[in-house]
Amino acid sequence: MKHDHSPVLPGQGATDYARYMRIDALLGLQRSPDEVIHRDELLFQVVHQSTELWLKLAAAELAEATAQVAAGRLAAAEAFLVRATLAVRLITDQLEMLRYLSPVDFQAMQPALGNGSGAESPGWRDVQGASRKLGRAFDEQLATRGITATALCPTDPAEPLHRLAEAMVEWDERVSVWRVRHYQVALRIGGHRPAGSPGSAANMLAKLAGHRFFPELWQARTSLTTNE
Image (cartoon, rainbow, N blue to C red; front, side, top):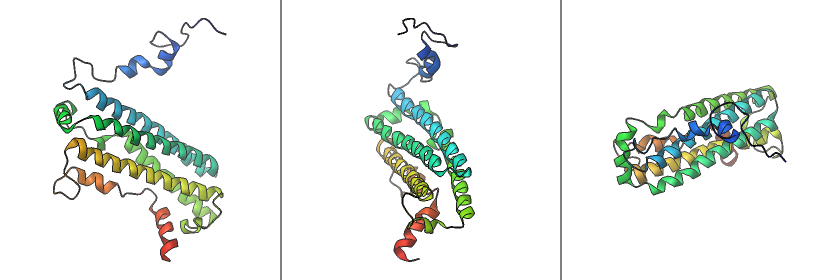
């Protein structure tokens, strides 16, 4: 058993854990006590900064899934997509922390946020682009095999292409659930009027909840039950 725990990695920090995780930099990313105008800025920043980290991971997993699809390794692609989906589930769950931020407190924080908006999230933009690339790679696989999305649904559930399609539907659904939860948070702490109210900032959030990255896979399910 090793008794010498002196750091051997380069970088700042008293331990190798601190150096590898870049703890000093990580914990220095939040506004300091003398900078904040409201104590709940820490809560707000931690939720959103960790969201960016999970989205960074999700985008990387989507990119790897796309590469695996292009190479015809569908089971491997499914595994990476499942990991991306779990990342979105986690960022959805952590929105629960914002239950403890009241509309009054959020309004008091607004000057610190400037004109910032969640729509400007680079992590989300990366996830959007990665999702579109995955969709194109999947379509190419369908074309190569000479089948349609509708033909996938009645196939053997264990068939790799079918399993990948189901994982893509799950990804779409989890993103939609995250958007719905985000919408509810906007109503709860942002004081926005419900969707449909003229000029409400929540209108776009509600509209996006119905967006699908892979609409052909959803349409395929509809076709089976409506004989379209």
